[in-house]
Length: 170
Image 1 (tube, helix red, strand yellow):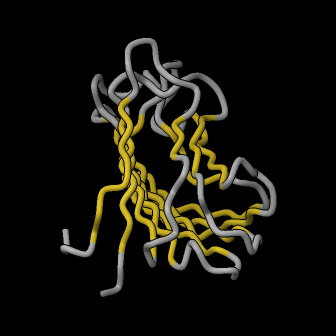
Image 2: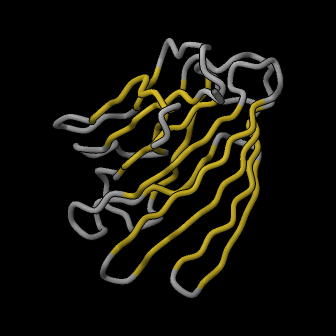
């Protein structure tokens, strides 16, 4: 990574799983944020068995999104007005396989609405690979000082990881 990236915080899910991954007290000293996730759900489900959600500053309101994805030979898309980010694989996919996510939040400390871009990829070696590009908007003028991730059901599996980076444009 470029030398303008600074690791602010990281989290690794321990034994028994976790219902949420939180980054709190995010400093406003950076230009942008980059969050790298490697996730899997503890409950049975395929490569798109669950949904990944986010909260900014403990709020799940005022989000909107559009996504475009592909799964093997199938293309799909959608839009909505909740805090959905992407799909989350369940424990029925290939053992020890985690989906990966890169979430980028430019100008996170400004008083403008916050745009969010995310790309994600999950696979099941047996029969499926799902790639999704998501563009979201958090219609709130507050600076982002906390980000949380959670599944719609089940828990994040042990060894799921999250890394929060601050990016300076200098």
